[in-house]
Length: 197
Image (tube, rainbow, N blue to C red; front, side, top):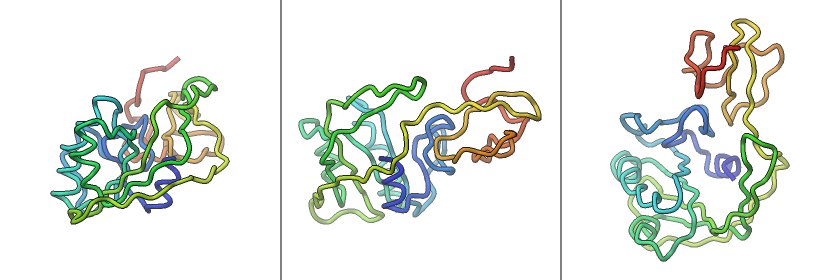
């Protein structure tokens, strides 16, 4: 779904991401001081009751900095956050299929998620009318479920986790080919854990 959204909406940056889950080479972490004015962002927030927290992000990204934000959200029309924030969007693309989430550590699919989902689009200016609803049946791109891809650097011997958006690098692997400028050197800190043996 994120690959489809990146291609369809020409997204440039990932909001509220980390080196572990960023789907684009450029991303803002929760500690990032602010969005890049006018950029096009992907946002995949925490689900459940945490979806209400998208309000502060939308305020900063869309209504203050003029960014476009595309978010994958559960369709929970019974929740206050849906009516307060989603109904201020420009477009809602409701999925005509159920999403399946794979466990990134083990090669197994956890099955169909119990919520229906929508891609919600807020554009750089405030919407002046209710959002337009569109059906969406994304095309299967043939990609296999994503697993965590750990590689060992042939130069320094450290284990590195490849970013989700990075194509498989050629062997022999070296830290400098990591598609995250903050991590693309043997001297960079480990992304998630320290695993030197």
